Length: 414
Image 1 (tube, rainbow, N blue to C red):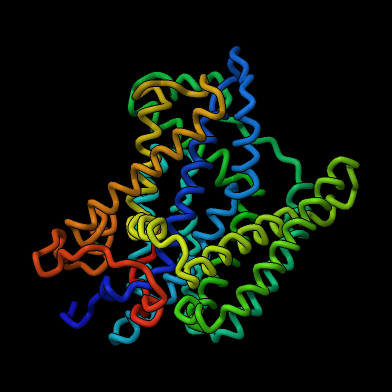
Image 2 (image 1 turned 90 degrees about the vertical axis):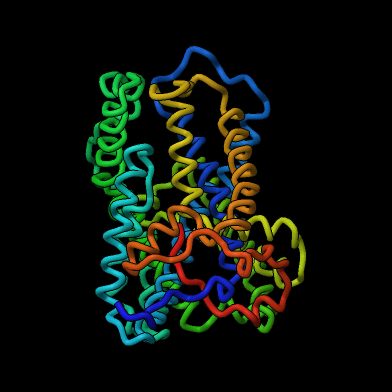
């Protein structure tokens, strides 16, 4: 490859994108660690803590499914930035990005061996499909994205009416022996089988969730086409309008769905707007973060979220591998023996520790270890890993000027 074929420089990353990734990463670790509470047969010990229901409600309202939908939007955004960068150098973006997604499949396989809920494989698969739209106009992308979002409630209802029996690997005594055995190969087999039987062939995930993911990717693609994240100051009025509309939509849908489920209304067989509730809540939270950023609020917190977001892939995989050693037989084998608040609190603790580790790491190194490896393999050339004295500058404070100075991010994070 020619020397002109270079990734976008680190100092040209869009700060708010990394901040949003950092926030989404918090939701991912909360969701994943809470899911370990449900791996295994019911334990004899009851969770009588009054704290657990409160934390469970917080996770359900603010994080559950909102985090991966936000990450998926950012994936689409990063896809568009990277495609434009590669194409501007006169290289074939289809070839480059296809190779990049093959590499992501490899990372996904490793992560899936440690955690049955890996999402990298889905991003790699949908990223290849997204290549079909890389030359599409912003208008075309927005139209397709809108159609998909409008179709989701009908598709979800249709899929839910298809009754199929799937093996429940995570609660089957036969397969749980693999999880608790302490043998690494048994543990990997358990996770890979669970990934297949509880995700890949389950229609609700294989069809509905993937349509939602792809629509979110297109939305991120559209955001890059209109340079959305670099125009936040001039879009503050629209952001405030979006904040109130998304809040009203989330509250209305939440009340409506609660009443509908309580009264067992039959329209769910034809129309299930559950994902609309998730998406409107996610949009409300993401818009709120963007407004706080524009108004120079929470700068210290956002600086930590930003460095975490720069290492999202490393932090995500590290969370899952660490959890394997805490909960499964290859480690402490805690499994689902603890009350819910333990899993929630542990996730928060791990995330906070990762914030400080990320800040320290990026003060000495240019990239997270997995990001660096992915970059080297993608471009098939070596990049400096350790910072030199010239480049070893502190992470800059976040301000509105960042939006003017920074143009794009280079890598696609998850």
